[in-house]
Length: 83
Length: 531
Image 1 (cartoon, helix red, strand yellow):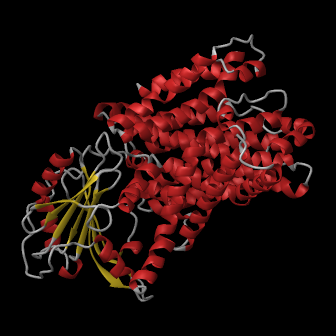
Image 2 (cartoon, one colour; image 1 turned 60 degrees about the vertical axis):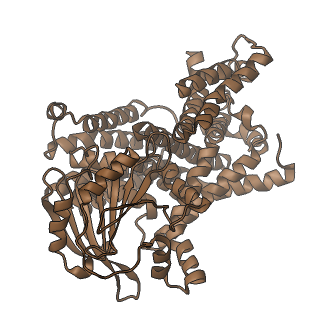
Image 3 (tube, rainbow over the protein chains, first blue to last red; image 1 turned 45 degrees about the horizontal axis):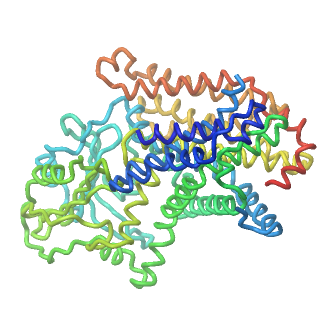
């Protein structure tokens, strides 16, 4: 659940990043700065929860999974958008 | 955020590039074999055609170990180490510490391999631990993990080599952190499409930025493993124990029970194992018994990781009475910060702390590291494409990049016939060397780089597809039979290999290097400015 939550936040951040939109020549869709900051915060909420409940196994797994999936989204999203 | 002035940044960029380039190809081999080794246990089960039980060391073991002990010379009952092999067989090694002709002290004794179902002896070998023959069903997994650990070089040189490679990766990671001006922004960088070379640079930066923390973690823990045995322990022994490593190891792991050589029957091991499982809620991963048959015998049982922690538990029992003596730290007898850090090294390096999910994550991180290494090398050579002295490295990157995969698949293709005729280790090596040599030959013979890439992808695809085919043709169970036995792991591995092979074939004609040359002139300046 933690991984899905963070990946969803990350997906929105990557999709609506201004520089990426410019690079992909997409019609710019702005998201307000407070929302963007909230999304960054939402991204790390699972980590805070895992630390709070002392589940370090889940924390490490979450960090690794978000790293890999985040890279995958950032890598493949241009291709998906272009398709 | 900029960490460095422009002049310093240039020096750090040079350090980043050279540290990666000089040892990059070997580093890639270590990373890709490490990535595969994350699934070493599963690879062993697939190769042996037999899945490991959920708790292979669960009772009953007591009566079997007593029988074996009675058949072993008492001089080898100083220590007993019991652990499961990847195919579920159990290794029980009764041994003592004996000085070799070279003066080095090593473990010598009798090792039994026990069948997972009825405990019958599959193999009995006697001698020094490092000279005992391989257990054939584990030969493939063992070959690949040894390649990762020491590149199959003699000790301690192999560990020195992988330790140095780990250090070079650490240097590349740290210099990478210092170089990136906007770490957070670079997490979202969009690989540019108007120039192939800049596109490669962006992809390298993107993968590198995402994997920086884990790159550091894996390089650090890997370097620790390489240097702990080959450098750190001898140095500590020299400084604190007058060079006596045996004495040092005794101080680190020795029993705190009072010495007593009075003969005494060992307590009920099944009861101790069951007790450790009840206390930890996890299956045991190994048993270590010191001073078998004596009043001061000590039984240590390592239990796997429970769901919420990264590390397992090591339970101690008085061997003669079976009394639980509490948990034992990895080193020494009291908890310490150093011990906690040491205990974290293994799960963070192997990624085996949360079952299949954490292994998949760690495997993917390994793939990311491979990608970063190869794209870094490609960038380095592409920026110097006008210089003929670097042309060899460009081809080398391609040959090693695909060739290591081809050679590992070749090792597997060699393993299965070897298993039939009792030469599993030798045939695994022949398969690896033969297919690796084939990849090198392609690199030498096929002059056109695009055609070379296609030929290497074709070879990789075919080799991967041949792996499950060879397994079944050499007597392995077919899918229908595996489904009946519920051996889904083996079917899953077959499917993964077939998919990998199909992907390699499907992308065979994808352009790789032609566009680099078309775009290099325009982008060289830009690359120089951005790193």
